Amino acid sequence: MGAESSSAAQVYESDRSLGEYLLFHYGSAEQQFPWENGPKDALHFPTRSVLELMDQGSKINTALDLGCAVGKSSFVLADFSREVLGIDYSKSFIGAAQTILEKGRLDYQFHEEGTHWVSSSVRIDQPPRGLSFEVGDACKLRSDIGAFDLVHAANLLCRLPDPMALLSRLPELVQPGGQLLLTTPLTWLEEFTPREHWLGEGDSASALKNILQESFDLEVEKNLPFLIREHRRKFQYTIALGMRWRKKAS
Image (cartoon, rainbow, N blue to C red; front, side, top):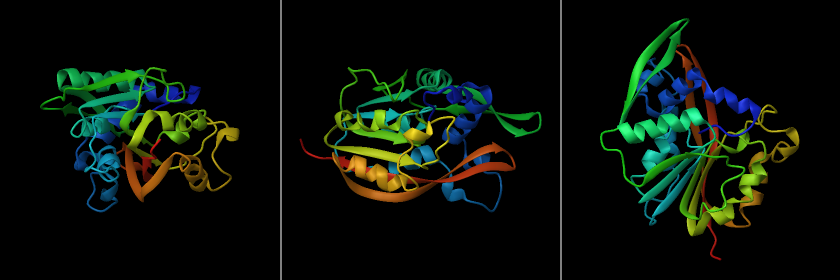
């Protein structure tokens, strides 16, 4: 779940957003939700968006993680794929992911209450080979990026200024027989996406399926809740639509 282009996406460059997303991606369950009762099935979404959707029985040599934010889903994909490329529009997020990859550790702070912040750190014991990160625009991906056995795009579409720019590119990004793992809460906001670029008219899920089914077959569809902590007593609870699509043979 990452940041993409538009003036509103500058919010993802702030230290506060960086702390929130590092916690969202790498924090312990207790750090993410320090209460006895609550939606704990919504924790660790960056990991679940991969493991609950992908076909682990398929051979995966190359994977692309679009909107990778601070990189947890890319690290998960690296357990299954020889080469993984993580791309996000936020320079701050990619800088953090790159530091974790290169040094195996990153210290950060997340908001507790008022002026109180909590110090924490990300630790990766053995950073994987074959994983790389770069800053990029999902609406304007470089022409030489190639095609992949698996493309993962979590909660990205409704943060793009032009979702169709990515959707029309997806068929050439996924190899025939490859997997497309896509999640989206379909939360359209004009500060990110002009209204004329929203999918559908009240039924974005159907509109999205109609677009993708021309080149892909839908194999899995499920609801994936996620929780983002703002501070100790305030959280964003959202339910994303999760899907696995299989690229049709050429």
